[in-house]
Every structure is written in structure tokens, then in C-alpha cells.
Image (tube, rainbow, N blue to C red; front, side):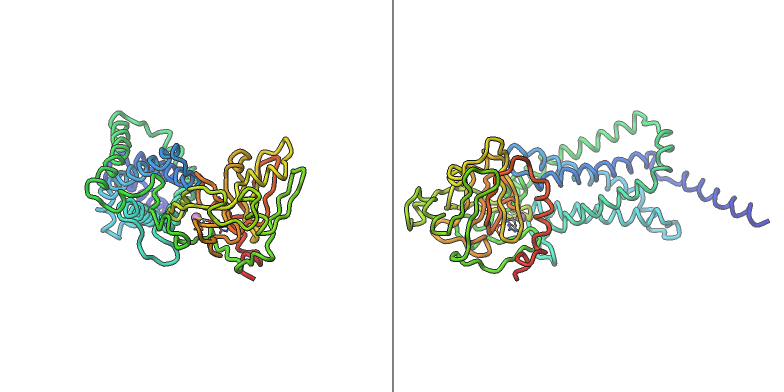
Amino acid sequence: MEQPAATNKASHSKHKRHKSGFDPFPRLTDWSLALAVGLAFATGLLSLVSGRPDDWLIFALHGALGLWLMLLLWGKLRRTLPRLVRPRLWDRRMLIGVVVTALVGLALASGVWWVFAGDLPLTIFNLLGWHIVLGTGLTALVAAHMLARIRRIWPIRRRMIVGRRQALRFGALLAGGLALWPAQQVANRVLQLPGAARRFTGSYETASYQGNIFPTTSWVADQPRPIASDGWRLMVGGAVAHPLTLTYDALLALGAGDLPNPTPDQLDHLDALLDCTGGFYSAQHWRGVRVGRLLDLAKPAHDVSYIRFVSVTGYRWSLPLAEARAALLATHLADEEISDAHGFPARLVAPGRRGFEWVKWVTRVEALTAPDPGEIIAINTSWLTPVGRGE
Ligand SMILES: Nc1nc2c(c(=O)[nH]1)N[C@H]1C(S)=C(S)[C@@H](COP(=O)(O)O)O[C@H]1N2
Ligand SMILES: [Mo]
């Protein structure tokens, strides 16, 4: 006797939920929100490995997608607020909606604050770090939510006919996001906000041309003990005809074109800017040895395509051959030796590459005949090696 009543009640409330929307196109908004989150995540991820001037569009797109997301969120909030203030109408779906909305809001707020005002003193991560954590968490949640509901969403979506008004609304919000991006640039400049001085990567300048005082960062937590130049050796090997092992003094002599005991100003040099994905950049006058000199001695095989730089901690990264030749193994910052934290005795200086590619505490240079996919794992796990932990 009770069963039919219960079914009746369930179908009734389900029916009611369908009819209780305050907006004529809630589903389109939800799909747009998910799309904007996904695209913002993809461009955000891509921006972490981009740093050449040609890459500016990736950063601009990421910003514009964020602004589109902001407009979508605004529309969604206006619509759902009346229901939000009546907890009686809350259900599980609503709760997920509230969490997603809060995450979107925080991710956007951290991005906008960074763009105009810069960093904030926060715990664990800096503001950009929190932005990345929030964006990643948000994307994971939205993806899980969509996957869990795909069987329910899909047939509804097929039935959803996108009319002229919906299409117009979708286009207008997207265009609004794209148009707001240049407006942000102008606002930064006209109001002379700190954000006006950012690089196109979003990074703020810190202590350029002041030697060792610029910030030190490790990708995860690489922190070897200070390395004495006496015991340290640089090995050049892999697919080469003449493997080399150089002492610190031999490396310096090579950097000065076979001049024993050179002064820093006699070394190879390169003006280059280190741009960390953590949000700072610093231009420095680096001195040391052109990698090309090492390769001229070691003679890579004909099929060598990459040169890999390996840290004492196991952290490693590789560059295409031609780019590696032009890079520098730096021993000095202007007239000072580079400090332990900046990678003494030798660190890679790779102009145009993001900071995480500038391997510190280099001990091996290896010629490879193929790219090294394992390096992505190595940069995330080197802090777990005994040397990386500082033992
Ligand atoms: N061996 C090693 N090299 C490394 C890192 C690391 O964790 N381990 N961090 C990278 C990152 S993320 C950046 S931004 C730069 C920072 O260089 P700095 O500490 O001299 O500023 O070094 C890179 N080289
Ligand atoms: Mo970094």
C-alpha cells in the first residue's frame, strides 16, 4: 500500500525539480561553465611550460577564459541565489553546485588579485600556487561530476535544442570575456597598478642584476647539502665519441677558452631571465661555460637529438641539441660565484625556458638520441632521493 505512494512522491519531486529553474537555459550555462573550466585548466597547464614571447596568446587566452567564467558565474549566481537562501530546497546536487561555485569564485579571485596586485602572504603556497591548486581541484571535481552524471545528462542534452536566444547569449558572454581581457590591460596601465609591470607570463620582476639575492626555488623540495668544488666533477657522456670528466678548475679554464685560473669576466657569459612558474622573474648576468664548448670536446654522435642535464639529486631535464649548444652552464652571477641555493658549482641557464628547466647542481651532461619522457617524473621525485633530501 505504501509503495505506490513513495514512488509517486519521488516522481513528483523529480518533476518539480525540472520545472523549478529560474533561468530558461540552465543546462546551457552548466555546459558552458564546464567547458570554460576545462579550457582554463588546459591553457593554465600549457602556460606553465611556455615562456617565449610567441607564447603570449596562451596566457591571454587563459585570462580571457577566466573572465568568461566570471560572467557565467555571475549569471548562475543571479539565478540560483533565490534557491540558495532557502536551505529547505537544498539537495545533494545543490551542495555540489555550492562547492563548485565557491571553488570557481576563489580560483577567479586569486587570478584577478594576482593580475592587478601581485602576491599575498599566504600559508603553504603563494597566491599563484593557491590559484593552481584551486584550478586543479575545481577541474577534477567538475570532471568527476560530469562523468558521474553523463548517463543522465546525455539524453537530456540530445533533447536540448539550442535556440537563437541561447546561442546569442552564449556568444555574447564569450565575446564579453574576450573583450574584458584587453580592458584589464588598460585598467592596469591607467590606474598604474602593480600588475602593469608584469611580464606576459604573469610573473613579477624580483631583484634583477643584483647577484645572488634573488629568490631561490625548488620545484618540489630538492635540497642537497652544499657541494664543495674540490670533490665535485662534471661528466659529459652518453652518445659521444670522447666522454669527459672535468674538475671545477678545468671547467672554468674551458669557459675562458683554455685559460687557467680565469677571472669571472673572462668566462663565457649570457644575459638571461629566469621566469619561475611560481610567479617571479629575475634577469641576471650569468657567467660560466657554453655547453657548445663541452660538446665540441666530447663530439656527440650523428644521431644525437637531445642533451640532458642531470643534477646531483637526480633532477634532470633535456634540451634539443642546437638549443643546448647555445645554453650556459653557469658558475657565476656577474662577479660572484653562484650560491649553494642557486646551484653551485654549476647550473643550467636556458634562455626562453621556464625556471623549472634550469637544472641546478648539474653533475652530468648526457647526449641522447631520443627525448627523455622520464624527466617529467624525475623533476617531481628528486626530492625523495637521499641526496635530494640533503643527506
Ligand atoms: N636540481 C634542481 N634544479 C632546479 C629545481 C629543483 O628543484 N632541483 N627547481 C627549478 C625551478 S622550479 C626553478 S624556478 C629554478 C629556480 O632557480 P633559483 O633557485 O636559482 O631561483 O631552478 C630550477 N632548477
Ligand atoms: Mo620554478
